[in-house]
Length: 290
Image (cartoon, rainbow, N blue to C red):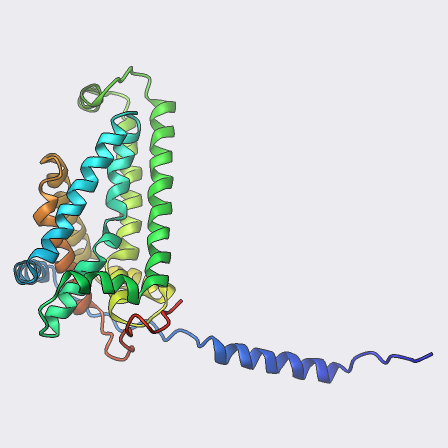
């Protein structure tokens, strides 16, 4: 009969340490949040001017983004009209995922900044180069949008007692309401929009441009908003007004305004975040960051 000695604690601790070292080598820690520049509200006009320049110079690939968003918006409205409580949440939820849809526009502006005339292939390549992190970020926005749509439907079903059978009935309710339910819904929607804006305003352009992780991009975006609260609030207000105008024109406004906002957002990122010490994102055949 053989006697088995208990394992030596020193050996166990050494083995655990070696595994931790190997793991740390395999998964390097994120670099610190890059420096954030403070910008004055007047910078917004410069961003829009540069965004319009990129829109004009990029041409058809940029305009194609606006057409796709306009058509997608119309399709979402048509589907939501089949069950009217979906309409408010569906439209606002569609706007939540808007920053991710602009990934190709950021890539077009990046090429123009490098002195290269961009093509539609460059926009598609941006998705291939950052497939994993951009997909993860897109899923996050889809989850937020879906949760908001479900909350909106539940909200109107529970608290709106007026009979509403279509969009016109809904508009009459909004104009003539005296129970402030729609006002409360608007406040909740504004909170969702504020959080979405804070985590996306520079994060997605950063993921397109630099080989960084999704959490680092998120934290950088939130920090950028915190360091420039007034400027970012005005920029968010412009995006809101441009989106409302586009919806009021039966989505036609998105054909021009969406590419304009996307290209301008690239210049927001470039001016606000100093990423000079971060590695650029590699080509499609390189492994993307987490």
